[in-house]
Amino acid sequence: MKRKTNLIVAIDVDSFTKAKYLVRKLYPSVKIFKVGSHLFTNCGPKIINYINSLGAKVFLDLKYYDIPSVVASAVKEAAKLKVFMVDVHASGGSSMIKEVLKATKGIKNRPIILGVTVLTSFNQKELNELGISRSLNNQVLTLAKNALKLGIDGIVCSPHEISLLRKKLGRKFIIVSPGIRPCSMGDDQKRFMSPQEAAVLGADYIVVGRPIIKAIDPQEEAKIIIRSIKNK
Ligand code: C5P
Image: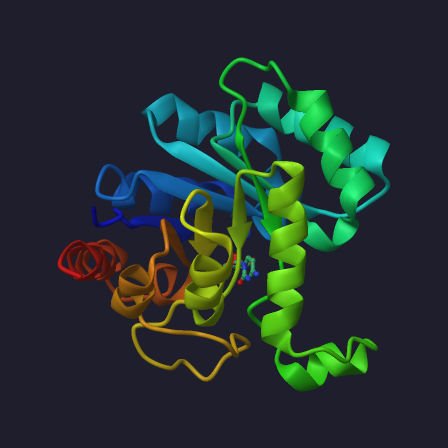
C-alpha cells in the first residue's frame, strides 16, 4: 500500500498577527502547522491555542536538547498544550529519550514524539567540523536507529536519507522531512529535494516553510505542493 504524505507548513514568522494571518489563509487546505523557536519565543502558547481552536494541528518544533529531566518535563508541558507532534534531538542520548518516553507514558492523546537527526542545513564538512568523522548518512542512521530502538515514534531527517532509513530500519515508523524545495532558493538548506521526490521516497510528512510563507500567493503555492504529493 502506498503511504500518504502530508504537508506541514512551518510558520516561521515574528508575530502572532502574521502567524494568524497565514494560518487563516492556509487552513483548511493545510491541516498541520509547525511552530518553531522563532514564533514560539515571540508569542508562546497563544499561537498553539489559536491553531488548535480552528481544528488544525500543531507540530511544536523546539528540538529539545538538555538533561533528561528537563527535556522530559518540557515534553510533558507540550503534551498539556495538546500539540500533535513534538521533537527532541536524537543526539540528546538514550537516557534523555528514555526519560521522555517514561514521563509521557499513559498521557491521553500523547503527542507524536520525534527524534531530530542531523539538521538539513548541515553538510558533510560542517559535521566533520564538530569532530564527527563518520559520513552524514551514517550519522543519521546511527541516531535514528538508537532513538527507534528506545521506542520513539518517528524521525526527522532530510529527504536524502529517507531511502536509507526505510531500507535499514523498516517502514513502521514516521518520517518527517524538512529541507523541501520545489526549486532551489540558494538559502541555508543544503540537503533539499522537491516535495514530490520526498513523497515518492516515503516521507509521511514534509515540512515546507519559506517556499510557501514567502510566496506571493501562499495558498496557491500550498495547493500546488499538496497536488504534487497526492499525485506521486
Ligand atoms: O523555510 P524552510 O522550508 O527551510 O523551513 C524548514 C523548517 O524545518 C524550519 O522551520 C526548520 O526549523 C525546520 N527544520 C529543518 N531541519 C531539521 C529540522 C527542522 O529545517 N532537521
